[in-house]
Length: 157
Length: 270
Image 1 (cartoon, chains in turn orange, blue):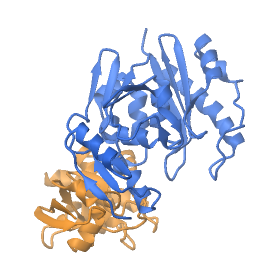
Image 2 (image 1 turned 60 degrees about the vertical axis):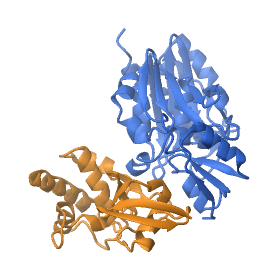
Image 3 (image 1 turned 60 degrees about the horizontal axis):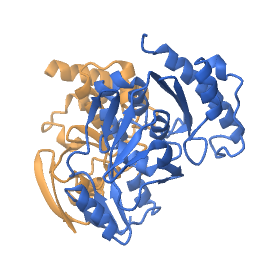
């Protein structure tokens, strides 16, 4: 067993876990944060993406012990009570999801790309979302939503 | 995934000792290739030795005509580095086109070359640029480092510390990527330095290799026309679901010509 301490959505979480525990298993099974999804389990679909110290990473391809001492933000950490984060609101407004399975991963990737560049172009967005797949083929609206979300975030400061 | 013992050493000596003492120990850097292998039980190590807490393994700097990249430097940091962009622009571009952003946020130079996937993008860059792999015990020339598919000259418990890239006069990398994985079906890195030319090919054989005949032709005339008629024999080239040996032989010619044209377009003004 190994002891890990990870700050998840602003809250310190310490657990004794098996070293083979994936970060996504730690989030879903140990902390009950099931908003982060396992899609392909092979580092291709991006459904499991969370922010690790602000960087988008595949939580299915990382051991929880590798995140010891780090800060993780999941989809559950974005809304302020009932008020959606501007990026979440933009996804809803632009109908950027159908089944919604890939959405948490898309939103976390979008947040890193906006953090790197405040007003991303369509090309920046497509490049930044290369690691996310949507099998309902809703890419056009996802790109519109990220653009609108970025603008709303810039306005909100 | 099977259970394993997990180690978090803080020094190179402790890390090397941990792998040497283990029944079947392996280092983990970013883990972007190793963790999928663990999940599929293609790798079943008794001990996993994590290099993330060891100081001095990350960072990018230029010393005179050499670019030095620490082994634990992540792809995202190499791709985004102004030092790399100024020294070897196509190295930054090559790394920025590997996999996808979330993979590049974790994957490392050292992990990538130690894994030595025969379709990986870093190996042709190291080979064409005559890079030196600096480990915690010695220096190994790139030409001697990649010994086969997923095998290198690294000994048990040997840790890559950094890679030294001599800065070329001009260089370019062009790949024909698998659209899903973005690994190279064929990739060609061309570099010219002090009159010497290197042409390194990835994705086409069991390991990265140099194409001597094209190098000789390009040393006489560094133009894409000079290699137009030089064909590689399909014999010994990889056959898989992505392409036949004939198809790869054709791609090597095309990618090499494009790489030369691209290198010429960004030559340093003389």
